[in-house]
Image 1 (cartoon, rainbow, N blue to C red):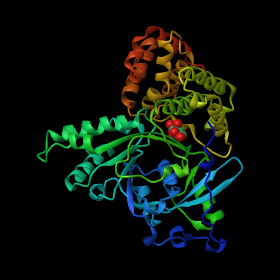
Image 2 (image 1 turned 180 degrees about the vertical axis):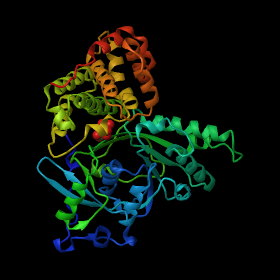
Image 3 (image 1 turned 60 degrees about the vertical axis):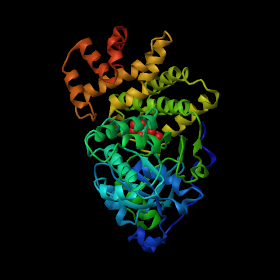
Image 4 (image 1 turned 135 degrees about the horizontal axis):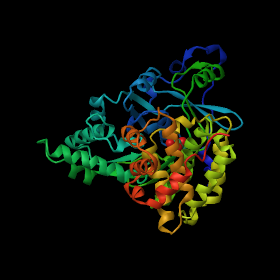
Length: 457
Ligand code: CS2
């Protein structure tokens, strides 16, 4: 698939004169009175929200009517920084030829996730029409009272109490059927609350009033570095502490209802479809699957970025073999797999995007469950071995064995499995991805025999 024609930012909105070298960004641009009114609440204020949903909202034809109130996940830092800048920040669009700078103006409020008072107030307002989420894949399992989804349920209770009417919740995490997964998790939390409160049941109200939209989101957004912040200061002439860097490509596919309206995101290239599954699988298996494979295989080979790992023939061949396997199960003609693969190779090779493998390698159990396991299962159902997907699992096993500092929501269970030996060790690790995998002796044997495939030269 090629990037939609309008996925490139259309204008460099602002370039301050060099004389304003140390002027903070907000003093050079709008006053608070020009901020768009809040109609979107976002939970999970990080770089990806700002390079993706905020970018689409900023470029909607009706952007002046759609402001975002963004809440951080667990750490409040990003909210403080953004609030000091009146919600304004620079997106550095980093193409192979150079950088372009855009100031995005759609974030009207930024708050710590702990500010549930403001969250409840906004969700209780009839003007709020959409809630977007970027809370990480792992957070959909969590239901402690401080989890982002528990906070969302609290906000929905406030909305019901104020009779503010229906709204849409839009998950923007790389989770298969992310809208359905969100609905299940939200109802699970609401049903548990219903047994303990006397306010009347919330879960049925959510079923009747909240639309959970399924989406596939895409824009490579590496972590911002001090050098990026310094570059904006020297090239744009103002000081911005909330810089975000992203590739030129941006894609958003959505499926579901927006009962209280939504911005005209299609003006920025968003696609609204009836059946999202083929698009979602294409993105999760081909892009994210290759990312995870490169993260584990590439790190074992001594590389630190996606473009370096892809330049290594051993890693590149493993990616191509995985894509060959995955595409056998991506048969809808509108998917245009050959051009999608070609575009991924270009995007991954962008030499000016420093996308660290370390950033991608985190949370392997949650990610591989969606990126490798479905391809492996489909191949095995078709009577084939699923070798290339098994290579990815073996690379992960080697990676967690070699990097004691790995991050994962199942870290304790992984460490316990790593303490075992031989085939039992491998099958215990596979069981953390999917219990059925561990019962497949042939697969355990295969993964075991693939260990060590990515040893450095
Ligand atoms: C990456 C994604 O960190 C990861 O797991 O695979 O964040 C990826 O960069 C985005 O999904 C691209 O749209």
